[in-house]
Amino acid sequence: MTYIDLIGFAAAFCTTISFLPQAVKTIRTKNTTGISLSMYVVFTVGTFLWLMYGIMYHSAPVAAANFVTFIFAGTILVYKLRYK
Image (cartoon, rainbow, N blue to C red; front, top):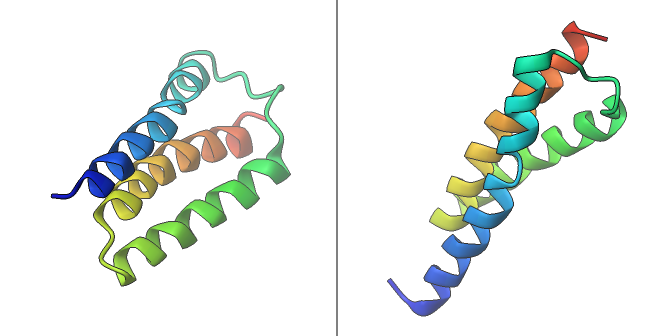
């Protein structure tokens, strides 16, 4: 593993983990009034596309980060749709 990979994994960790507090809060409270539906739809689709990109280019940092972020963003999006 190169230092570039380490930078990629560190960046992936930081950006991915940043969604955890929002996901936990949304799941606990079921309150989604402050969340933009259109933003989360576009963001979740974009995250899925980055996941596909990371898989196709065999980029573990990109694929791993976007897989986890897709799960978090998808969960928040489902709650937004369910608890309007």
